[in-house]
Length: 373
Length: 196
Image 1 (cartoon, rainbow over the protein chains, first blue to last red):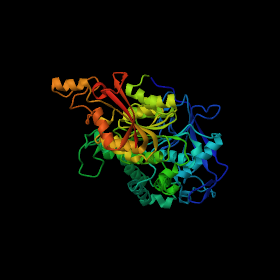
Image 2: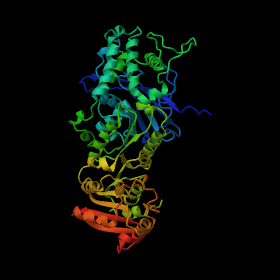
Image 3: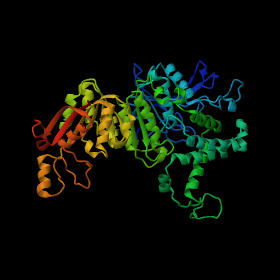
Image 4: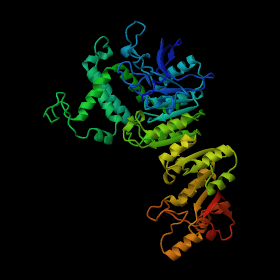
């Protein structure tokens, strides 16, 4: 039995006003590409603003135009799903700096050529500002909930902290209120891999294939951080990779992808370059590294939430070592100190950080329970 | 839904509109009752992720955490009441947990099964083995109750710590009974405490 595809539509919005950025610049001609699922009700009170993770995009349920794969949260968004689109109107926009239709480093600057490295360094809050402008354009004063996993969770926290009047609730999954030294370190490896690729050419690779090798290595390194050690062991162990011609996997005493895990990572890296822009990767990872919600509010995280009346729910996974439970608890304590209603739960799932995208029934229960209030 | 008897006593005695922290809130039955019947602003602390998920599903605000280690995260006097129902005897240091409850809440409700109930006494006296009764249904090696306590023990502890007993309720089965010989007759006790 295959369910009918959920009712989704893709849109673009051109902002009429320049966007004021944390870096001090004003970015003109910002375009936001977004997908909606479900129907906005008469009093515009049933919207859920869904924020995607670093390498995702607005294709929440619709088939991805470049990969042909189903939307990244088809599992959880749709009629009768935990994010029930019979009831809610889901909006998901490609973030500012992205490469799937929203303005980013590959977009044309005033001179008609791509911004490339002339694109201003943006922050998580800048991404949120762009999406608040989208809400304004849609005439939505306040969303029922802001929802996001990983980087999406950072945007949800940033929205709740910086625009407390715009959301009734925030659901933050496998995320953090600040990037740790380890988080920054992994991102830096990825960025250096891109910039060390001669095809990067200082960012001006338009018209050529760009720094595919560098971007693939960046993706490979990052992908390891999304999985758990136990998950990798279960999936691959030390098993050897069979060759395309059918010969059984063996140690070649060379540097081919002998191990299945090598082959898997190479595939992840290569397929990523078909759908993601290297400069976007630099800009978005930078924005994540700069993210420190407490720093934006005088160094005290509780201060960030001083004005909020929203409900919060923070979910972490026991095998996520990228944004471990301690990060969620840190946020929850700040929210408690600010007097905000907050729930915080660590779910057990074997898949590491990526658990939030996979089939975890307990997560479904929490999402549905929290949103259906 | 019918509340467990000790929870019904607590629910009936929390002031309307109060701020409440339910420590060891389980599936949130008491919090939901307090919210729905008395407009209480209830928060919970619960160790089991499945229970926390159930609470979130009921629209309750619950932190996953451990009474033994996580009460220190709550500021002084943040709540009108801190509630600890049938959890005291499962904590590593009941005395410290008690102090924490009265630091966080202006008042505290504490309920626990009374280990000096006559059935428990008889069971130990005649059987010579750790009692397994209706209220203590799990064998000694598997029970979560690592600090069995009697009503008189509890009174002694709060006396030593300068804690005032504002009110106490005693239960036998579902029924409330008088305070007379409660340490012998009561299966359950509920205390409302405050700092002197």
